[in-house]
Image (cartoon, rainbow, N blue to C red; front, side):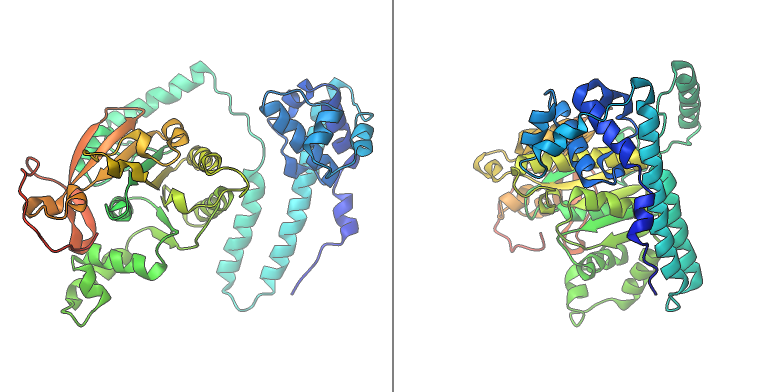
Length: 451
C-alpha cells in the first residue's frame, strides 16, 4: 500500500528564500561558501535552480577558479538561463545570517527525508508478506540514516587527542588492538600485525595469477573474528560459493564443479558448516559505481555490521560520468574508496588489474607503475600489494614452482616494503604461507592446472 506525500506538503518543507539567499551571497562573495561548506551539500537544496548553481560554484572554487554570474552560467551549459542566475545575485543576506540560512536549508532537507522515510515506514507496516521483526529493523535503519547524515564537528584538540591516543597505545600493548590479521603470517609482519580500520589496501595482479583467490583467502580468514563483505563483480554467487566450498572443505574445485568425479561429501559438509559460521556477506551485482558501492556498504554496516569490504575488482567498476577519461574515473573510484574506509571505519581491500606492458619485461614481478592508471592508486592507497606467480609466465616450470607465489609489498604507509613468499594450492584456489626458501630453477614441461 502506498502513502504518497503531496507535492504541496513537500513544498512546505523547503525554504526557497534561504536557498536563494545562500547562492546569491556566494555569487557576490565566493568566501561565503567557506562559511557553510562544512554543513551544506547540493542535495540539501530543494529548488533545482539553486541546487545546480550551488554545485557549479562549488566545482569552480574547488578547481581554483573564481565564480560569478557569467562563469556559472557558462559552466552550466544552458541548463539555466543567464537571467535566472543574475537574479540570484540580488538575494544577498548579511554575513551574520549565512550559517543560519544554511542550517535552515539543511533542517528542511532533513524534514523532507523524514517525510520520505515515513512513506516507506507506512508501506512496511502494510507489507504482511514479510516478518514484522524484519520490517521494524528496516524502518529503524532508515531512521538512523537521517542522523548519520547530520553535520559533525570533527576538530579534536591536542590535549584530548593525545589522551585518546595513550589509551590506544595501552590497548595495543595489552593485545586489544583494533586490527585483523590476514592469515598470511609474513604479510602480517610487514603490516604490523594486521589490517586496520580506515585503510585502503589494493592488491594487483595479472589475469590468472590469483587476485580473487588471495582476496577470498584473506577475507575468509578475517570473517572468523569480524564482519567481511565481498563485492564480486566478476563471479556470480554460485562461483563464489564453489570456491568457498573448495577452500573451507579442503576439496578440489574441480570435484565441486563436477561432483561425479569423486567428491568427498563429508569434507564438503564440513566446509559448508564452516562457511555458515562466518560473518561473510556477498553481492554479485556487476558494474557498480563508487556511489553505489558506498550506499551498499553503509546499508550493510547499519544492518549487520561491517569491518572489511573486499571489492573484486576496480577495473570492473563504472565511473560516475562515462564521458570522462578512464584515468579520471579510476581516480574518482580510489578517492571514494579511501573516503569510505575512513567514514565507516573499515578496511577496504580492492583488487586491481595490472597493465599488460609488464608482459614485455624479462622480470615480471609487479611494480607500482604496473597498476592501470596507477597515479591515483599510488596516491590514495595506504598499502599496495603486487601478486606474481612465476609458473603462470613460464608454464614449463615444475615441482615447487607450481605452488610458489610472491606478494610484493610495494607501498606501506605505516611500515616496510619487501617480498612475501606464499604457497598457492591451485586445486583448492587458496593461498597460505610458504615454508622455507624459494624454489630453485628447474624446467620440465607440465600440464596446466587451475589459474
